[in-house]
Image (tube, rainbow, N blue to C red; front, top):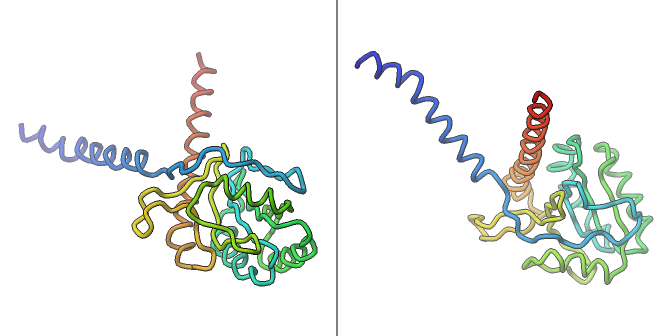
Length: 214
């Protein structure tokens, strides 16, 4: 009896504890789907798409000079950390007519990092308003068609976020003016969604290998 108890403590109990915490990660380590099927992108260049990409979506508006701080914060805290992951991209929506300003901003960002996955898409004002509206958040665009908040869009064009945030309840986006919000919340949430897709890819690969062995 004593020997059995010792074996249980040494081998079985640690396994039970591990399975308990592992199941907790699987059950709770996912971002909530807050809005399904946000609008696609209707702008230039037409090659930029939200489909099959993990996207950080932002709205910089037409006053880019006053939004550089937002872009630099996002670049340093989020983009540089994650841009090497497959299918990850930044998409910044700007109105038509400010193309030259984005060239200057991209050049400044390029001095700090590889900007290959920084995308600017130029859209008509009505299309910008409709895209933002399709997110179905409690936030709004200002008169320049910008917001300091950025959003996580998954590969199926769903808005992902938190439905139980300790500060705001439902957290639709992340404030690019707040280094604390980017560091303490957005970094974690981007890690979660990337891990979610990596896990799905591993499961799919394993399933294909097992089917191939039959």
